Length: 409
Image (tube, rainbow, N blue to C red; front, side, top):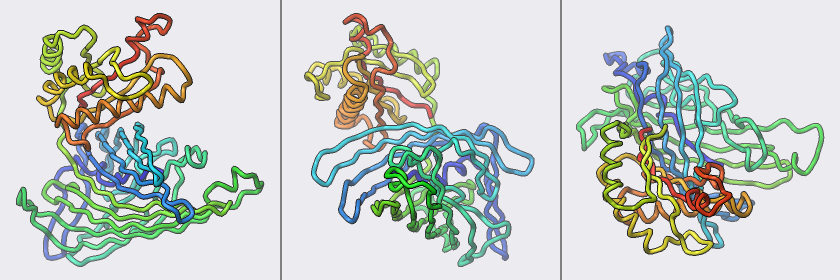
């Protein structure tokens, strides 16, 4: 289960929208069309199966969101993209990494309520925060309905978001001064508990028995709200979710999460594309290309060399990456490392090796201090996106590539 706490991303481009007087502070969101921003969050999670630790995971979520329209009632339509990378270490050793992307679209009111279709699996935490229609004094409390929507397609073959309702309790605790910026932030605490019983199926099979019977848990969150900007500055959370199946198994997810809004910077300008292309050309390698795409500017390394049947970089490729690293250091945008391979072997093996090789390149770039590991995302595409026919060795060499994208979004 991926827990992507996303309650800040629909707030991150709002204008200052509050009033403060003897009656307290009025919190509400005001949206401006075409405003956009980015959120980076980290989830540290432990997963237990029937009481025994199964694995620990660190999940990085990179969220880009844009206001596409502002409606007459003050609500706004949004489009968002979610990039999730997970690194997990099993209790008995071994580790794995993977990345996944989601798109989403929703409408959110000025008080924070979502309207979102069941075709979208993100965000996970919805209708948090929801503000009251009236001003709130320090120490003031209120409650509002919300829900979590989990992606259980892989774990339980549930093809729609699995919704778990809750009632959140809010308290406007106090004001704090940000030591770095001097801004005043409003501390808002949010807590909720969940208990949801799934309807018992009419027919009983083993697959159905393995479906969630009871979902329960709790969340405790702290939101630092910036009233001057009308947006969340950062947040932290502690959570625990327990799923009991009809078959009698119990799966527990517990951990912490934190996130902050970061500045959006566009790198894919004509000037930057020209500079990067010239820098890559000056390296003198014939198998490195530069192109502008939907996510940013991509440096593609064709026929990248690893030790046989592994994701261990050859020394020659490390030298190549060291030179590319100097180009990447001139920008501070997040990086997406995408692995590709030729159409050889099984689809499962193709996906695994492409993911592993993307991780290998990402780890080496991190070792070179190109980026903090939390700003490098990876994904594997297997052989699904060829750039040349797989019928010749020359074509297969082009398809064995790793792409490094300096991301806009």
